[in-house]
Structures are given as C-alpha cells and as structure tokens.
Length: 142
Image (cartoon, rainbow, N blue to C red):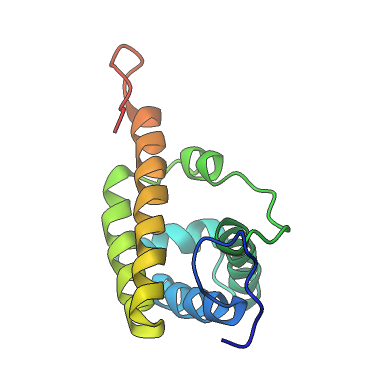
C-alpha cells in the first residue's frame, strides 16, 4: 500500500481504495431496479449531482475508517427524514456493497469493511423502523 496508515484507522485500506469502492458502488446503485429510483429522487439524476453525493459519502467513509476529518453530516437523520427509505431497502443495499467490495478489494479488507457496513446498516435500519413504528409500539432494540 502506498499510503501511510493512520494508527487509529480501523483496518488497512487506502483512500484510493475507498474512492474506487464508492465510485463502483454508486454506479451500480444508480441503475439498481429497487434502490436507483430512491437514490435518484434524493440525489438527482445528473452526473454532477451524483459526483457531489459520492464525494459526501466518501468523506463519511474516510472519516469512519481512516479517521480523516471532513464529514459533518448525520446519516441517521438523513435516512430517517428521507420519507421513502424503508427497512427492506437495507438488505439489497448491503448485498450490493458486499458484491462491490469483494470484487474491488483484497479479501481481508473487503471483509473488514463489509462487517462495518453490516453494523452501520443495522443501526440505520433500526432508526428507519422506529420512524415508521406507531408511537404506541415498543422501539426496536436490535
């Protein structure tokens, strides 16, 4: 690897590898039969709009994995406020990420990132479930 890893980063991955996964993943998301319309409705349909979104999410992952500063968003709020993101959307999102990561990264790196995606996806799914749950129901605890 040609970069100097941050001793605090979660696992061995370079910024260029994160960039490559994000570019490939979102190229697939854009045309996904179930997820594409949802993302296109929120992100937009132009390359410029998608480039902006990919840059934002890349900053998120670089912060989460490499501990780089630069992302100041709130993924939970974004998913909960989207209005049309449903709990059942997370399984195809995770499956597509697994496919792209496995095809793009060394096996150990892919496994580490996929495990993180599962943890984050589970949390986001619970947040979305709680938003759609009647207020009289007990919240999801995992």
